[in-house]
Length: 356
Ligand SMILES: Cc1cc2nc3c(=O)[nH]c(=O)nc-3n(C[C@H](O)[C@H](O)[C@H](O)COP(=O)(O)OP(=O)(O)OC[C@H]3O[C@@H](n4cnc5c(N)ncnc54)[C@H](O)[C@@H]3O)c2cc1C
Image (cartoon, rainbow, N blue to C red; front, side):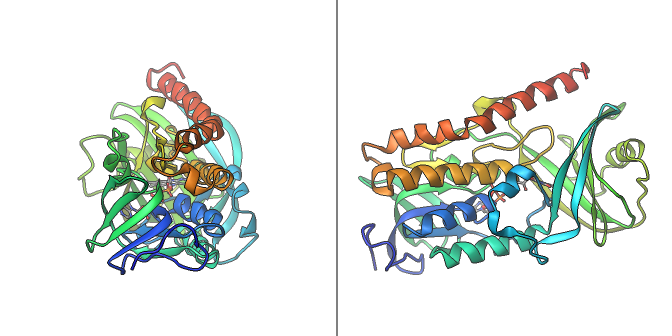
């Protein structure tokens, strides 16, 4: 079965069909992909493909910045999404110096994504579990091959597939640098969330501690070469212990491994090609000093969706005269985030060089 872009509200694509066509194919049902889907599905046929069940296995501390929250106006105080304590101050300690605290909300990441997926589906998007295998340009559409060899034709592709983005590499764009991370839940209590950047004889430590209902969530970026080590990085626990008043952990109750994109220069940020947009972590829009990525994921999703709603997907799609302009307008809209990342990179460079 195949159906075209003209009558998007009545007919929707599914990779279970031998070949289907949609206005917009979104790879990745993380926060970026789901917000874009919700915003775009009211006017377009939208397929969201994710290789995992929505929200499953995502390693995240669940701190939602005020910027990120501003893109989720319907979130309200939904108890199922927020963790206790639901409002937190995040204190940053850099080289032993306390920086002004910032207000964050404390969310259960899986619950947040379930809530976003329900909104995207209610708007008309199809969220399906399947993996992107390849992308090839055709005359006026992209051909996406999914893991069951099903072919989807899409006027526009949105790559929202996080670190090591398969969309980004399928488009022939250079990969963004990635760092490994560890998180664990430890017994204990802590009043404020802490982000610590510190150094000792073992090297530089990037670590965080967040109070959760069931204990303290402790996380750390893992030094290159130590990704396979079995234990939680001791140096990170020591750095947190000396930087956070009252930080004391008991037994480790759970642990997980993750990774995030950490750009080394703004050249590592790639927003896509005409007709194929990268958003969120796939684009590299994560603050390198803290790993804060939800703000960039949601800001870029909203920016691309706004451009596509203004241009119409037929105009912004592959091979159409407006497709390059749409990419340029996305670049303009997301430039405040890119500028913020550039400033954060300078800060990080100063810290790593020992000037802070
Ligand atoms: C340990 C850790 C803690 C963090 N804590 C915070 C925090 O507290 N606050 C914050 O703001 N940020 C935090 N971040 C960063 C934040 O989680 C990410 O930046 C954010 O999730 C990016 O959202 P996204 O939608 O761009 O990508 P993701 O949330 O990574 O979603 C990408 C989706 O794409 C899917 N996918 C990947 N490849 C394919 C494929 N080939 N085919 C189909 N689907 C695919 C994945 O399964 C995934 O669901 C943390 C990151 C880590 C690693």
